[in-house]
Length: 149
Picture 1 (spheres, rainbow, N blue to C red):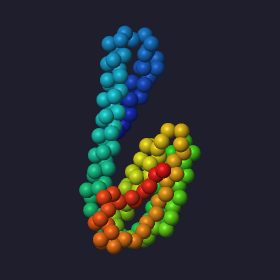
Picture 2 (picture 1 turned 90 degrees about the vertical axis):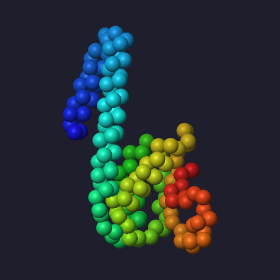
Picture 3 (picture 1 turned 30 degrees about the vertical axis):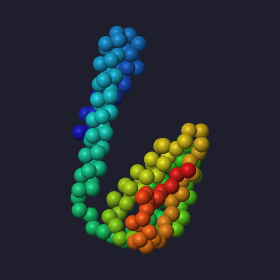
Picture 4 (picture 1 turned 180 degrees about the vertical axis):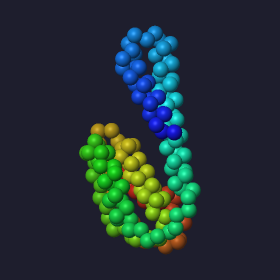
């Protein structure tokens, strides 16, 4: 599914680059609509692939969260460089979870912290854990797992 979509996007980009200035307004509108539809389709495909990964049953295994966080940071290295941000990884436990889900969670949280930081201010992202009692957890309105400032 992705390869035909890549071709549509590629030819749309070529068309815009080569003939974009010579198209009448209606042609530019059609081209823009086609490119926007291709982007929406790409998002739908990626979402379906993500869903298929999450719906397959994965056993809970012992996962070192520091290792997962470091792997995610390696994948997001471009965001770190582009934003001039820093990431501090504190003490994180080893827990029994679905490793794919935990990796996806950390990637989404850290990636969003980089994407949605204050303009002109380099983000500082602190990843840490703390032990809490059930009473403390139930009294929290928001659980701060990843904090961006």
